[in-house]
Length: 258
Image (cartoon, rainbow, N blue to C red):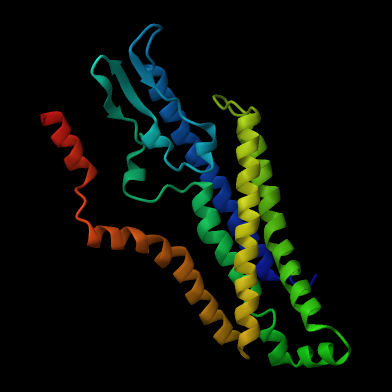
């Protein structure tokens, strides 16, 4: 209750709401452009060409949908790729696609860290932790209650906003919201809940190790940067260092000249 009525809850929830609304608007606009491109390039009946339509779930998590939406030609020589339908929006070639997956990866983890870094360290500084334990509270119950309480505070607003956004997107023109659509939405929500629970646990764990809120905040932010930015990009960096892989543009140019 103390956290629900705090300014940080309203500020972080408002920021999350704004980012999610902007993400849906921008991603749906890009989806409509790719859908129009698909309608223009869609082969006629009995044509040897095949093109994969854009996936409506790509509004939330684009993934490799743009790479899969290519124009293929089936002939006696095999299957040939003629063109790749990357995002029509040139801005996405310069910056990361602001889809819902990016918000979950960065913002949801950051909010989880900001809500949990002082959950134990703050009570150590105030002296209330000793009073709570002196009254017979079990440490395991205290930790579990703190973690679940902050997790509900983080995930419930996100769940409501995401589910409302999924309903709005399902009613938009050009979106086929069948069983496949809602199944993928449920998977994204379940994975988001597990993701938020992991970072909430990390924040509570760090907060229980240190005695100051400032130290807990610095360590939690360092772990957030490590798990969100450093480790996911480390594999690509190591692969490029170990194996000299030519750029995709060079491979495509060589295939055209061949």
